[in-house]
Length: 101
Image 1 (cartoon, rainbow, N blue to C red):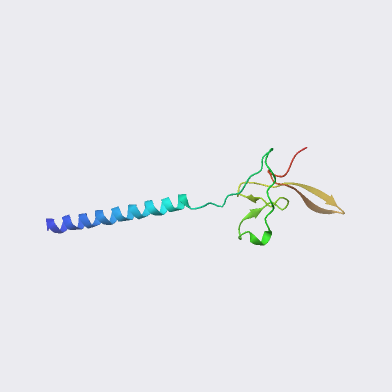
Image 2 (tube, rainbow, N blue to C red):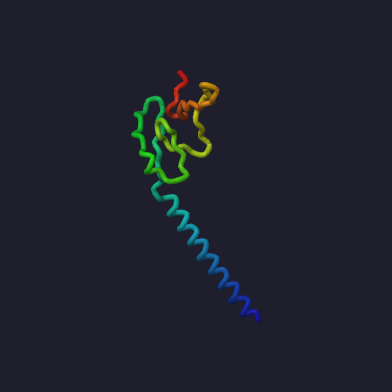
């Protein structure tokens, strides 16, 4: 009986070890995989070339002016305009292309 428990514990330990090794390999490959880099422009950087809208995968958010890929937490600057008793929304840009001046 004790041999059976010993053998079961050994098999469980080997299975757990193999599982942890596979998790490590999967995480390492995810870290070393090339990421979709988005060049953010700052004051002195050159302006990036706009991306065509049809090349962006579904679910990605783009700035309609400079076509920079935005994260879920990055917002657009906009203002509401009333024209002939209708409200319109004027998009001014994102944090990368909108200048307050």
